[in-house]
Length: 194
Image (tube, rainbow, N blue to C red; front, top):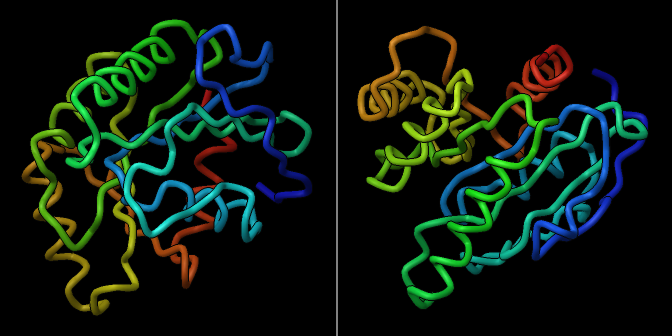
């Protein structure tokens, strides 16, 4: 997929704010500070389209990004598992994610992002199982691959695969927003998701 245009459609804090689009949507899920916004910026060749922060919990809304005049919509879901927010705030984010997953007929895939440097936590396992229960493929993108040596990538991918119980080869892709490792492969996959 060649990126010609990309824009923020809306930052939605409530389901009634979700855009009324007909095109396919692909959502990115993952814990706070896993690099969802950085990945969106790298995929779309935009520096500050998706707001990034060194502080976990920055994305507190469901953010919709149009790619190539709504040929595809990429959805940035709120991060989960950030310890410094109240239980009430965590519950609100969880409800927002659940509502999005249940109500969007346009949703073609939910991709889980995990930090390649760390074994997935209980929240990641829960989210992965949830994604599979919804009937999605279970594609996982292991972010921040530039933070470890290339020789260690296969070992870390295997740890993620084992922790999440992934059996099918090719369902975990290492990715780096810095070097754009696997960017073209991911864009190609997004283009062909039905």
